[in-house]
Amino acid sequence: MIDMSRAKGGRTPYSWTTKEFGSDVPPGRRALATELQRLCRLLALNPDGSAPTQKQAADRLPVSDTSLSRFLSAAYLPGIAIVGSLHAVASADAGGVERVGITLADLEKLHFQAAAEQCGDCVRLRSEVSTLRLQAAERVVELVAVQAELNATEKEATVLREEAAALKREMQALEMLKSSPQSGIRAGQRSRPAPQPDAALLPVPLRRGDRQQSNPEMRAALNVARQAGALQTGGRQDGALALLHHSAEVLSPAETATLVCVLREGQLDELAGTLIHIYGRDNPDPRVMQAAAQLHQRGAPGDAAALLRAALSTRQGAT
Image (cartoon, rainbow, N blue to C red; front, top):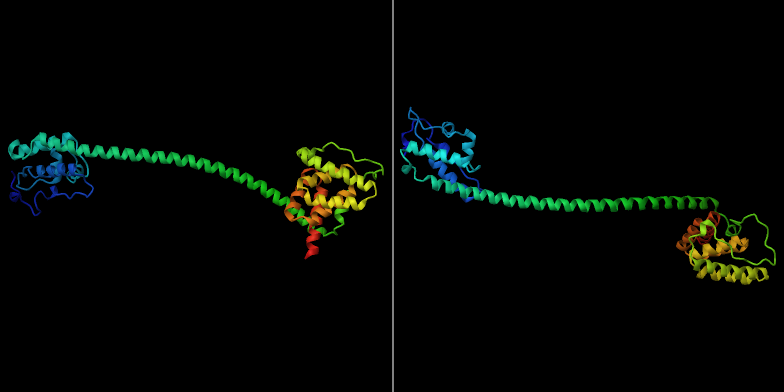
C-alpha cells in the first residue's frame, strides 16, 4: 500500500480521488466509483516523492482528465476495459494483485451491477418516451377534430352574418318608409286585369321559388284561397275577412306565405294584401320574420317587405 504521508507537496496528496456523489446516483454505480477512488490512491508516487495528479493518473490508463473525474464521481459509467486497466496499474504499483484488496473478478462484478442499474434506467426512459409519443399522437387527433369543428363553425357564422346583414338592410328600409298600415294592402300588387265576377279560383302550378313547399302547406293554402275567393265573388266581404282573420291565427308562417302566393296567382291581390296586414298586425315578431323569410324565398320580396312594414306600423302605433 502507498503511504500517503510520504507524498511531498503543499496540497493533500490524492485529494482528487475524493469525490462527492449526487443524491440520484444508484447504489451499484456508487459502489463501483468508491472502489475506483481507492484504486487510484494506490498509484505510485512520482520520482520526486510527490503524489500523482489526476492528469498523470488519467494518462496512464489512458483516458482524459475530465473522463477520469466523471468516473470517480459516478457521473459516468466507465467501460469495462478502463476498469481492468486501472486494476492492473494499481496492482503493479502496490506490489501485487493480492495487495490491492479486490480481485479483478469482483471489480468486474461491481461494474456489471452498475451497468444493470443503468440499463434499468434506459428501459424506464424508453417506456416514458413511448407513453409521451402516444399522448402526442392522441393530441394530434384531437387537434384535427377541433380544427374541423372550427372550420364548420366559421362557415355557419359566415352564413348567419350574411342573413343578418340582409335583414338589417330590410329593417333600415322599413324605418325610412314608415308607411301606414294600409300600405300592406297595396304593396306587391301586380298590374293585371281585374278578376271577372264569375271567375273561379283554379289551382295554379308552383313557381320555381315554391318548389320546396310541402303538399300539406299547398293543400291548406288552396282550400283557404278557394273559400275566400268564393266569399268575395259572392259579395260576402265580411265572411272573407273573417276567414282571413282565422287563417292568420291558425296557419304556420310557411302556410301563410304559401297562401299569399296562391292568392296572388289567383289575381286576388286585395285578399293577399289584407292577409299580409292582418298577419303582421296580430302575430309576434318571430312568426312575422319567419313568414317574411318564406315569402322572400318564394320570390315575393315585395310581399315580404309589406309584411314587415305592417308589423312595424303596428308596433309603432302601440308605443
